[in-house]
Length: 225
Image (cartoon, rainbow, N blue to C red; front, side):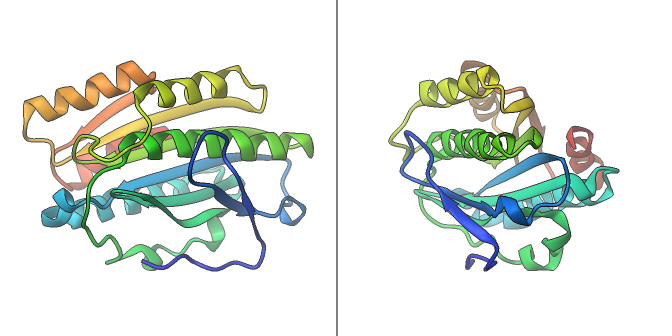
């Protein structure tokens, strides 16, 4: 899946991470407040049998965003991760995000850098929020991390994710931050417990297990947007 291009984007660095992020140039933003929405989708080899479920989760979050009464104030960033994390596109207005651009794009392979990705998406939100606040915007954040399994490739551990969340909560840049771990195709109780432990140890807001791609199950995600 290639990165979507936008001449209005600017690259940024994230402290403590091997990965940076991009975001719409602040002078191109017209509202006074924004909610930053991060979607990080697992594309490791173990999801090959149910890439449609990962895609369905991403599209459901996007659908929920588009139906939100605050849709004009949402900036969306999408990343995918296996052994490494890759940004599909950085923070850009929801109106510029076409659902068709994401269909059939989640090709699976490789290991799972879950913790590295978690640290990055949190750190990216904090850094971009700080830049926005410096320019008199008010900012909230929502993070969705969608995965089917456990970490097998990160250079960082759960403490790095926890530290990033603590820093996010302590900063004055984000007025609020919701972080949701989404477990997809969870049929093994041990794996479900692994996700719950990660959520608790890292300090994420909530864990949602989705064992199929039904509309009812995916609708659980809508309440967070």
